[in-house]
Image (cartoon, rainbow, N blue to C red; front, side, top):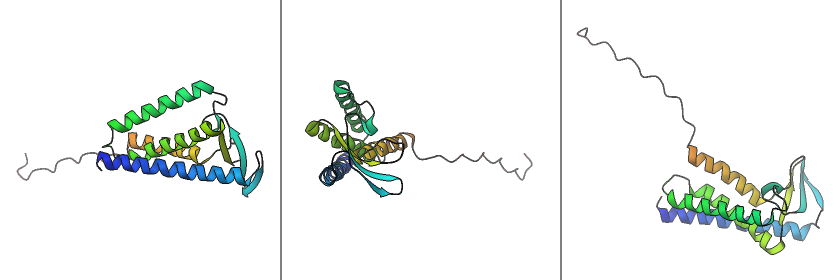
Length: 165
């Protein structure tokens, strides 16, 4: 894939993540009152909560440190992407991570906090952007490490020569 197509693919993934993230958050804010909880599936609740931290509520009330840390991480990701456009699948983690970060930054800029709405037992509530960031990290590890390698079979011993040598 050419660098231009790789960039376009990353941008398309990021735009898709932002669109789905913002749509789902708007539906939750319009359909549930703040703090409301509804059973969605066995063990999974639909909630409407706000989070001032990063993914899954970590670093709540991080303030300027959170903004600076996010900006530095995005700059590092952009640099990595720009210098590795030839690496297979690099567009996928880049798009997921950028889209997730932008989706949550939009909330932070508009509301001062992020809307979270999926709640598993004994786990913080999260949203589409958090999920994209999580899968983006996993995809980045895959891109960096490559697919699992099979153990190479030991080299076979050469067959004896007919002349006995």
